[in-house]
Image (tube, rainbow, N blue to C red):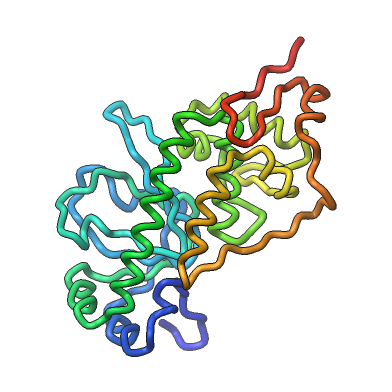
Length: 275
């Protein structure tokens, strides 16, 4: 990397003892993951081990018809490439850089060799695997039982946690694919959240302006996953401040907006405004 430029940082890697990191450093290659770039498609063989240093990578389960739903979000707290690392053949999932950002990549064989002399890295990978398994399991339950409204709010909060910004470079089309629904449903939810004063929308981006209010709309899956990730010694989810002094009473607001608001954990959805 050019002198004078700040090296990209992955939290998992930066938590390693100096000796372990030094073994990896010669093999780590800085790359830029471009927004919406598909890194791995279902059926692709192995690949590189990737450590995001910014942005957000989505792991998606894809049907034969091309429908998809996000089952795991990976940011600078983690890594991608477990299938390749374990030598399990082709990937059953799609990996997409939903929000672009810098990353570090390493050849699988070089990573395996370094692991033989890196006990802390091995421990971190096992701990991280447990956290990702918990996230995948929670998202399965979320997709089955929670409303589109709650799931959209959850995805927005997860993206904000991942990139550390109120401004999310996400389109409604992208959110629809992550949530696993058609775009019209996301459009209706986004309009409602904006009228509630929780978000604003512009071309190609969504800005969260009242996180506490959005947390009221989201299901409990968001807080449950954050709690699980808080057990990672190298990662502490950011404590967000809201621009609003207190969250709105969404159930009280709902009749005025012509919708039926759902409390966290319910399957109740948004109703279309009455004519």
